[in-house]
Length: 440
Ligand code: S3P
Image 1 (cartoon, rainbow, N blue to C red):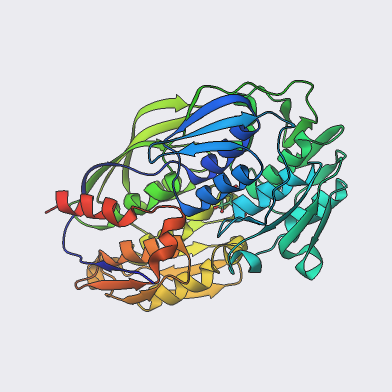
Image 2: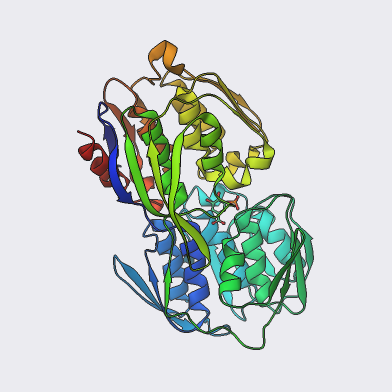
């Protein structure tokens, strides 16, 4: 088990790039695998989660060559996947297992999907139930609520489904199933979750429409789609988030993050940080593979507490661990409500962040669906958390958040069990060091 030592006292300065977007990388691997022809995916996320999805597609017969810089996917066409001869291991990835379960439900072969101990505790009924309505034959522990999941692929039928949760994993799983289903599938969700699948479907000209809040997908298109020779994945805003908050809360910082995705279904953090008083500029805005991208410049600034309600949860969902750190050093109270989905992420992020930040001197009350955080504020400890010997709880975003919190302390912190950082951001430590070295 590895640990990460954080030595505070320096500002964060300089320009860095962050890994390619994890959500888009999963989707790009799947959709280029189903395309006719070869695609080079550039700036893909090399986190373990996405490499597991790559191996999953390889086990389904898709040839993929990979180097540090790019992945070359030799698409097999819409109906070209073949039965895997072993278990498909999705590692720690909720996105991987849920999207692949949708995809595999409509194939004419048998497959078994599983993942890490954490994945085997996370809810799968949310995709299994609607997929069964489409006619999928899926068996799993606790009646299909938990992985491993055994999928006997079949001819699916289209359904009309109103998801009770705003979840891009549910939506994308069902869209991938709908692609292979007979008829017209209609999907809605209580609030718009990240729309990367929709954007990629449109990029490839797939028959997907939106009418109001409903997505309408024609299944079994008569022709598949031709591979675009090259697809560049935008930088991951959820990875950039650690440095956006870090540069804000460490005095004297000035950081530019190049080529970061700013899809509006993902930018809740920017909106919240703006309301808290952060100094963030979006520069050089452009579009890549149907996704908006910008360079993000952040300078340190004092923060104030804010209220974050249910309407902002989907577009901020992965940023709550690091937002809790921002709230913990801000002036005044931050109230987060309507966020019970945080309890079923890689860890129960309401509980794990409350535990870790309390150990660093923050005052936090846990609620079933959120948190109340009394910020330390400049007037008391000069906005400083206490150094910690913290735990990741096996959750990459918790580990990186505590690391950033540790930068405000007056002495060294150690975060234990940090292997998990590799699931999304293997060179987080190097990038942080790069910024701290520039900040000497
Ligand atoms: C993701 C969707 C979100 C997010 C996860 C990635 C995706 O999960 O938290 O990290 O790529 O679709 P939910 O769909 O469960 O909200």
